[in-house]
Every structure is written in structure tokens, then in C-alpha cells.
Image 1 (cartoon, rainbow, N blue to C red):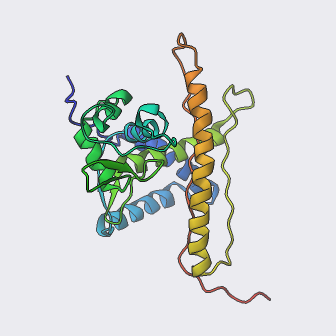
Image 2: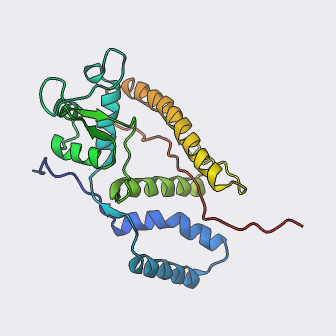
Image 3: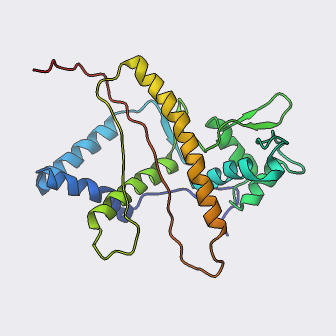
Length: 250
């Protein structure tokens, strides 16, 4: 029997590594690199990864959906909302407490362990009265000193799988037509880059909340007799390059 106090950690096996690398190899080959040059590129990237130390340490926390479900339920279930419909500050134990919240998600995480992760990454704040306040509407997994491994692994897997399905898609495929979108400008100052990041962060949260409402509504309407379902969603990321000196146009 699995230990309830130990979250299920994510590992990368050879099959998963190959699926992550497939779209990269496909684009490298299309870009003109042969097999030998691809291997040299991978070995060069591996050497850099092994020799360079990143300022943020990675840690295993278990499946990210388990934490996301806790945050989602905290923002939606009436038991954990105040009279204005906002997430209440919760005690660790007791009626309608954080412990009750975690157990309602059926995540299998020990409440104290889940709370430590949520506090460590700034999703929850401990107040002076020993209650806990939800500070973010979605689960964040990066701090100034640490990054959680599993959310990064799942993000890369999703991005890789999307590109792979676009590359392999046949005309008679029954699945939905997948896509990726982006907007960008190569002429933004440092100050405007910061303003854009704040603006995009605020607007994207509103957009994601709308999409999450749709997903939650349709998840509840799924027929109980159906045994096979698709996992669908939308991932977003911000873009900001290193500073570049632009050459004058001729």
C-alpha cells in the first residue's frame, strides 16, 4: 500500500525522454542537421546542463494537479467562501478547515505536507491568528530560490505532445485540431517589458479563470458511464529575451 504521507514523485524514463525529444529532433532535421550533428548538439547541451549550476534548486512535490485541485476547490466550494464569495481564511483543523478542504479533493496528500508546499511557493500565507489565507487563484510552483520539478515536467510534456500531434496529425484524425499562438515585439524597453509582464499576468489570469469555469462545468456534465475521457486544457508562458542591441535599418 502506498504511503499516504508521501506524494507520488515523477520520474523520467527512456520512453518519456524520447517523446519529449521527438519534436526537437524533427525540427533540427528539418533545419538541416544530420544525425551526427544532432547527437553532438544533444551532448553539448548535456555537458552545459551538468556543468552549469542554476540559481534555483528543483525539488519534487508530487503531481501538480493535486495542489491545483486544492486551490480550485478553495475558490469554488461554498464551505470555504465568505459571504462575499471570496476564499475564507482557514484553520488547519476543525469544521470547514484546510484539512477538510484537502480531504474533499481526494488527492491523497497529507494536509500538513500540502500546506507546506503551498506556503513555500507563495500560494498560501499564514496569518497572525494562525489561520491560512489563499493568496493566488491558481497554483504557482516557482519561488526565488526553488522550482517544483513536476509542474515543469508536465509543462514540457504537454508542449512536446502538442507539437508531436501537430506534426503527426493525419487528415482523417478524430481528435481536435491542436494549435499554438503567440504575440511579440522586438522593440520593447526594459520599463515597458515590466509593465507588459504585469499587464499580461493580470489579463491571462482572468482568461484562465474563464476557461477553468468552462472546464469545470463540462467536467460535471460528463456521463458517469463513460470510461474514456480526453485531457484538454491550455498552457501559457511569458516571453522576455536578453537585452539586445538592435542594428539600424538600412
